[in-house]
Image (cartoon, rainbow, N blue to C red; front, side, top):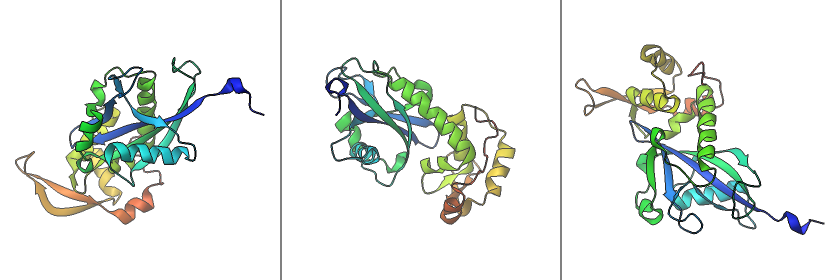
Length: 229
């Protein structure tokens, strides 16, 4: 028999990272209901009765972005009984990686959503800032070993964009020569004949991801960043 006094709610919260070619960003919304209405928040919601946490996270992500088949990973559970002063709520957190170019911008108007640089994340409701910090740490750890950050890139990209992506996630300045050498040695990239002539005089070549090698090496320990912390 379940004790009546132990009633609690279970929700999911999604930490959604994107990359615009120059900066790593976080997608936030204005909370649309009381309490704490109109304050900045992660996108989330309660898990429905016949729904698993993964199904709820997929539903929430699609509702906000319109995207499916997005890289998403369950990362943490926030269950402090005092975390939500309006009721005992356990939150299962996920982080997601999306290509901003595929994002359906009209959804921003529906949820009054906005992208924020990781260096300029505002004060969020409840313990959502702690969730973001936890997600960033998890992302750093995973991206140091596996090529998951490629999920943030468009179909074609330049090596300088990859460098900016890794520098943005780790908030460091990379040794570009060593990083580029390690990157090219993975065979993950396929060079195209096209150049990006908007961001440099000579123009950087565009690359595409070798999808077969990516699938093969996704779980391999590539060790892009030797000391992720």
